[in-house]
Length: 425
Ligand SMILES: *[C@@H]1O[C@H](CO)[C@@H](O)[C@H](O)[C@H]1NC(C)=O
Ligand SMILES: *[C@@H]1O[C@H](CO)[C@@H](O)[C@H](O)[C@H]1NC(C)=O
Ligand SMILES: *[C@@H]1O[C@H](CO)[C@@H](O)[C@H](O)[C@H]1NC(C)=O
Ligand SMILES: *[C@@H]1O[C@H](CO)[C@@H](O)[C@H](O)[C@H]1NC(C)=O
Ligand SMILES: *[C@@H]1O[C@H](CO)[C@@H](O)[C@H](O)[C@H]1NC(C)=O
Ligand SMILES: *[C@@H]1O[C@H](CO)[C@@H](O)[C@H](O)[C@H]1NC(C)=O
Ligand SMILES: *[C@@H]1O[C@H](CO)[C@@H](O)[C@H](O)[C@H]1NC(C)=O
Image (cartoon, rainbow, N blue to C red; front, side):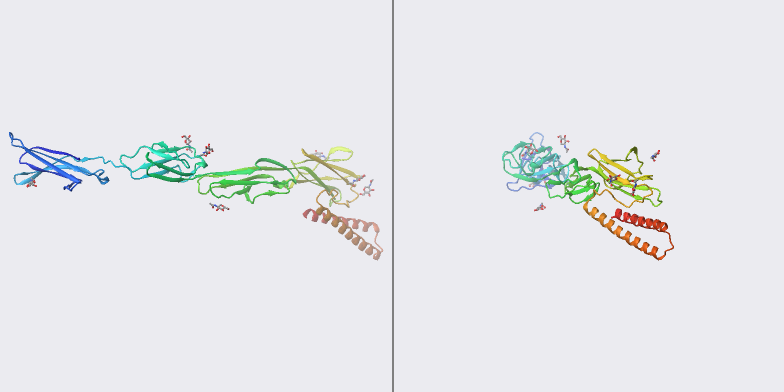
């Protein structure tokens, strides 16, 4: 029943017509039924008319405007009078339920707050639903919005909702992305030089991810240390990210410090001016060792040049002396892990040095090279000496003193050259 349309006190009588959205509604069996009544007031002679409309509504009639009009004759014309339009609520049951996920970003990550929204297409829309969480038989009764705060990775799965009668079920898949990174060892790590250390950085994520290693901001391959050196010290970072998920990245840091006892090497040479000698030390160790050199029998520390860094954890400096007599120099290198002391015999300035590196605590390879160098040097010296002697015999006029001096200088220059080659090697 859409309504009753009444026209009162008309003369002559007229007809009532029904309209839907301005279109005349014609009777259709079982869908549009219109009934009319007319009566004449016997005292006034005026007519009253009434009509009812019965209409079978469908969803298309949502917001449709129904109205009625009375049409009657006036002299030489037709007149009409229209009612106000009326709109009716059309009620219909839910035929379909849908579920969707409202999340702050396109992808969902651990810690997000999400809302599951369930909608039934009936009118009025259903207000209560059952929500089924992944793997749960029992539905949770809720309004059309079901909130999940701080969602966890184990919340990944199929979410369903239905009307309370459990017919018409909608479902949607929710994937909660996550990214973990485990670095072992991590934090501050202190190892001794020569130790081995295996490190691993293992990601665990909702998708396949790869890790990137960086040392002091430079990319490098997965590090592995079978024999730690001072140069291995540094800040190692292992990083990974999930491309698909905005802002999901993880980084772990390892601060590796390689420590070691001091090791010191001493060498000496006569300077080109022939008036002084240079003692060179090379020291390694971490923390940086403190080096002090004294002359045996005299407790004064010897002045040394500023230490230069040869490589990570390796330093050198020089001491220049002009000994009047044969002296022994003692150098000690010390850090919190230990102390190493070496001595070096330096002959008086009037005796040019014939030996080079005294200390040979370096590796065997260095040692072998040194020995070969010395042997070759001695052979060359012998050759030069032989040649000089031969020249001396030939030129019998020359003085032995003069040749001796020359011989000394040549020999020393050879030594210096060799020394240079060795430090390059
Ligand atoms: C009312 O309807 C009747 C019968 O359908 C018709 O004869 C008459 O002319 C109509 N009157 C008007 C004013 O349209
Ligand atoms: C999730 O909601 C809670 C309160 O309901 C709020 O404290 C928290 O900050 C929200 N988290 C995010 C990531 O928006
Ligand atoms: C998911 O994990 C959280 C801890 O992260 C736990 O409290 C919760 O019970 C787990 N839920 C399920 C369904 O396993
Ligand atoms: C992840 O990687 C493994 C092996 O590397 C592979 O078997 C698997 O199919 C990958 N998964 C995806 C989602 O790419
Ligand atoms: C060492 O150097 C200091 C200042 O640089 C100087 O005063 C001192 O005399 C020097 N000592 C020796 C033994 O040369
Ligand atoms: C230094 O000379 C002393 C004698 O003056 C000797 O006993 C010592 O062995 C020498 N040291 C080295 C390293 O040659
Ligand atoms: C000093 O050393 C040189 C060799 O380096 C040696 O020939 C000389 O005898 C030494 N002098 C003294 C006083 O020991």
